[in-house]
Image (cartoon, rainbow, N blue to C red):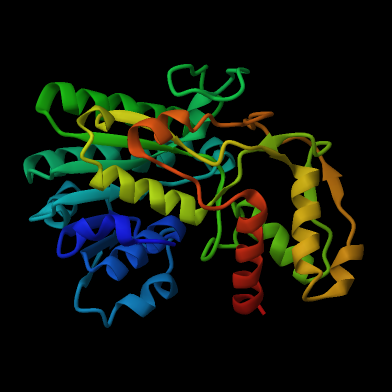
Length: 332
């Protein structure tokens, strides 16, 4: 991606929590390419050492192994930082339904620790990963930031609470924050393994093994699948914007297009079968709908375009094409 607009971050100190995770490691990589001084805080509960191995020899990269549930750890990590990109969280709606207590401890308690640490260390700006799950049972399409419904899972509740705390820390303490409501992010380094693997890397792995992917429901549920480069761009725009009206807001971080699960599998098969023609003949299996799932998700990105000058660089098709190339080279 084009990093030229973000050269003002050279030599700036940026803390990335969850920096060994999928999104966090991509943010670390982009910041290091710009020339920023990057600190990664991760407890490796869901992140991986191999995601950050290429950065360990970089003199501008520092790894702190620790947990955001520990306030002292958060304070140490925030010391002398200019900006925080807070990505650390326990994702997954099913995980939160199975274990709401741990999800809340990390996503709410840990988030509050990070806000306090950022405040006490005079961090200039705190950018955090919000979630499209906040829209809950609202049926309005496209999703516009000011119109949300009731959360449908413990995970969604925690991400909404994050937004409330962030707003309160600005009005009460003057800490500048920006929340980015991620819409179904995918791309390089997204883990295809584990009980809570996201749909795209899971399906890619299954197709490569000639296994039958299982779609929850009839396949008509749709999502605004968002390639990782679009998400990196939004984070970089959030910490570099000079538009004061853009601060202390939440933004949809998406493409502004939707794809249903049947269309998604067709796209995956199209790009994967270029490497292995047998994949074109792998059939899809349908299972029951998943508890807590929102039927349809489509973002309006007009607010991000207007206030942050966001321009999505990748559509679902170009994103899938790049993601497939990465998985083909790294999963085999």
